[in-house]
Amino acid sequence: MINGFVDLRSDTVTQPLPEMRKLMEEAEVGDDVLGEDPSINRLQKIAADRMGKEAGLFVPSGTMGNLIAVLCHCRRGEEALMGNLAHTFIYEGGGVSAHGGVLVHTVPNQPNGIIKIEDIQVAIRPEDVHQPVTRMVILENTQNRCGGAVLSAEYTREVGKLAHGHNMLLHIDGARVFNAAAALGVDAKTLVDAADSVTFCLSKGLCAPVGSVLCGSEEFIRSARRLRKALGGGMRQAGILAAAGIYALENMVDRLTEDHKRARSLSEGLSKIPGIIMKDAVPPSNMVFASIDDSIPFSAQQIVERLKSEQVKIGIVGPRQFRMVTHYWFNDEDVDKTINAFKKVI
Ligand SMILES: *Cc1c(COP(=O)(O)O)cnc(C)c1O
Image 1 (spheres, protein in one colour):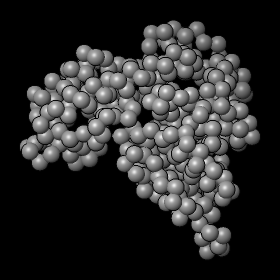
Image 2 (tube, rainbow, N blue to C red):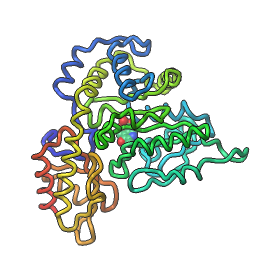
Image 3 (spheres, rainbow, N blue to C red):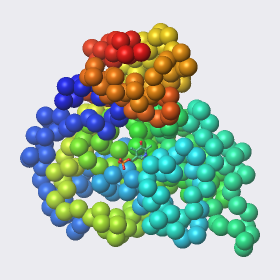
């Protein structure tokens, strides 16, 4: 429960824990634009180690992390391949085109989150003065709009090999890469070892109040730091935020399997209600996607309103489709509460 509601709209609604707030209060800080914030430097080092990369850069949001990565990798007029359901394509305000003059070339996401290798192969432009240069490919793990689908290390490496063979770069939007790692029972770094750059989010399932970390080579992060400043993302005594991020990385990663377990319980309960159809028989990570069939006389919007009067908030992702995201603030009792609320309003 958060502020009296079971809030499943996103794992971004998680709040900083009392332990985080205490560490924030005590955080050692300095001017991070000058590279002098010890807490930020520590967070960036821990993050880079977790991703198996040389360096990290704290950024205010995942959107800025992805934007900086694309702007570092592509020149104006070059193109980035990504899924047609990629967060960077749908939910980042068209930033890579607006700020970087980068073309977005979409390739279909399959229901299991992947983009077919042969589809990527076909999308890569030949050497031809008429055509834009295909400079990079972006994968998303977990894939949000595909229901929190999880991409394997083997698949990611295959895409990396294909990209590098064409003088292209691979960026991973790993906003929820720790959820992917938890779902597969592997170290997050094995899921991003083929990537030239990766972003992950501290403020979703890991409960920190603000921020993402962009990781890659020392050289890449040097360019990324310049771009972050140019985009207005240079922060000063931001160690106060990093303190929560460090706590998040050290204490909140290993418990993500609990969120996945509750997503499965929620899904199982909802699947037994007549009229509700689940996207996946078993949710792959911490997201539950459900639709209502024609036997239900309400629109998605009406269902959301009715659930709200039962103190349950969920998201809408289609005319008759919902998204529910489990997180630290959603416990076993809330699972039952949500299922009962659905039974009542439908
Ligand atoms: C949340 C999210 C982001 C970044 O979002 P911000 O709100 O800008 O931090 C990027 N990619 C995916 C897949 C996400 O879910």
